[in-house]
Length: 279
Image (cartoon, rainbow, N blue to C red; front, side, top):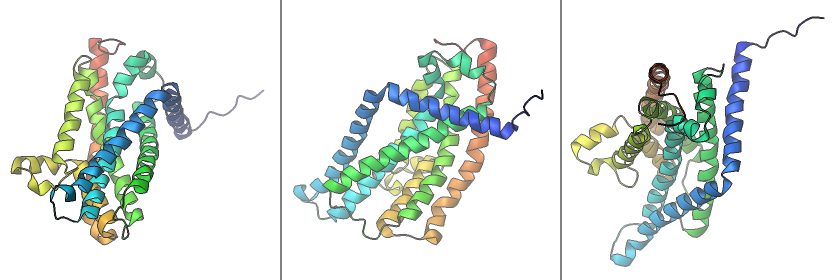
């Protein structure tokens, strides 16, 4: 009787990636009511911000309210998606602690790249579904200025940005490893800084010079510029390249850097006994 041949390493790793995706799916089902709460929250938040644009005329403003509503809604939707992607990756360690699985996950035979890739893949799919639902609700409620929208171009920018933000999120994920008590709080501060400097609800040009300098290293800045150009102006690929190439560079830099930093943080946590269920 012959033994079955071993699976190729790449196939085993892909199976492990799918395992992490499935695990997150079952966690979502387990906390379904909380997922509904967050979906309602982000949808109402996007609606409230869009109503700000609708209300400008009521207080004596003379801007194009349809354009302003669409501008604000695109910012709200993109921030909901990108911040959720960042949060899922940065909370990787915290979720393991909350679920009591941190020792098992970090001692499993699958590589850390596989673990983080599975988390990132699920976050992207989940975020797209959530954003599509929110956009659909807002599209029914508001008279939006999307007649010239280049949806394919917007999706391309979003896909490229997702890669770079995954790397950014992995870097932030190391913080709860280094400090179980304060690491997650610091990652929330990083997220807040991204919200402030990236031009989510306004142009980056209105910020002080030192904030604009920080904005140049935020993937969210270029994602918003490119997506707004595609959806509001119908910009083609040649015009969108100005936003895409910085995101490509960030993806090439942030993803390997994030994995390397996480590896160092994991080694440190194991040596110092910080890899445990409670802080």
